[in-house]
Length: 111
Image (tube, rainbow, N blue to C red):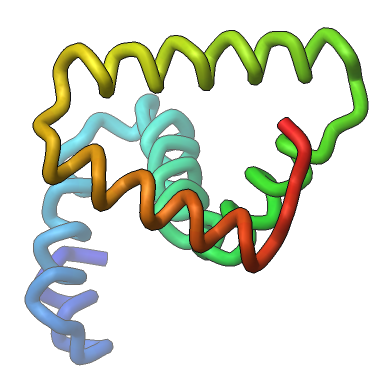
C-alpha cells in the first residue's frame, strides 16, 4: 500500500504521517531494529518513576541496615558537607541546613 493510500485510508495526525514516511524510507531489513528502538524509547519515557517512587527508594536506601552501606553513606555525607563548607555560599548553606533540620524533625532517621 502506498504512503498516500495509507494516509488517505486512515486520517493521521501530521507527526504520525511523518513517522510513517521515515519508516518507509528505512530499508525493511532494519525495521526490527527500528521497532526495538521505538519500544525502548517508549518504555523509558513512559515508565519514569514518579517522584514519590524516587523518594521512597531514597528513604529505603537511607534506612538500609547493611553496615557497609551505612559507612558509605556516612562518608558520602561527610564529603558532601565538607564540599558545601568549602564551596557553597553562606546563604545557601543556611537554607540547606534549615531544610535538613526540618526534615529530620519531621522524620528522624539514623545515618
